[in-house]
Structure formats: C-alpha cells, structure tokens
Image 1 (cartoon, rainbow, N blue to C red):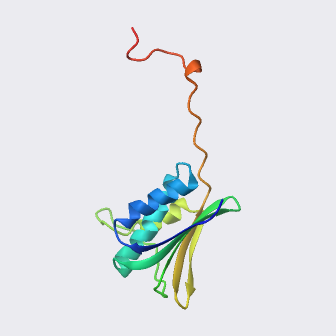
Image 2 (image 1 turned 90 degrees about the vertical axis):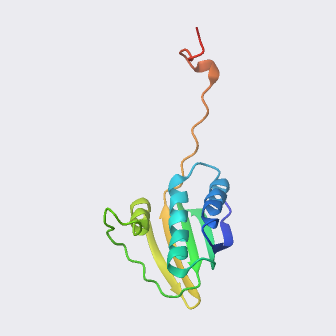
Length: 141
C-alpha cells in the first residue's frame, strides 16, 4: 500500500478531516488508527497552538500501521501522566500507550515527529448472504 502523507494546519476542523482521509486511504474500518490520529493532532493544537503546520503520514509495513505527525517544534516534552477523574485533558498519551504496539518521538533540527505503530486494521466482515439468513424479520407475519 502506498503511504499517505497530508500537509495540513493543526486546527480543530482538520482532525475529523484527517480521520476521514486515513479511513478512506486504508479502505477498512480503523477506529484505533483514527483515534491515534485524533490524539496526535489534538496534542499539536493544544500544546503548540492552532494553525501549526504539520505533516501526517500513515504507512503500512511489517504487519503494522504507523502513524506519524511531524511539527516544527524541535523539543519533545511528551509525558504520560495520570489524569484525575475530573480532568478534562491529559489522557491522550495514555490512550496512545494503550492502543499502540510501540510509540515514540524522533527529534530533528527542524522539528519533531511523534509516531505510533498499531496492528493493521482488520478486513471488513463480508456482508451476510441473504439467501442463507434464517429467521423472520419484524415485518414478517
């Protein structure tokens, strides 16, 4: 599968658009991948500010789906923390840590990339064959 690379501005409306683009690119339901995309983009918005230019990359190799978000901030201050029960924020990296096989940060002179790897999304279940479906519908007498 060819990699997906999106150059975008980290703004709230870009999050669902990126999720949709990733779903369309992978061609199968991928809620865990989409959740990680949301968390990585939201972290940029929250910590670097709206309008920050980012690159979102999704690749599939070696039996894993890799999501990477690159932003222009060269410093990495990612810390997994325990959010309190009433905290409205602070669970993004916990979610990433729970879903990903592995994740990390790559720092460079012109920015950093936060990435995670997940098992590949599963193929969609085949549609049921109507000729083999038994039982009665609510409309049946």
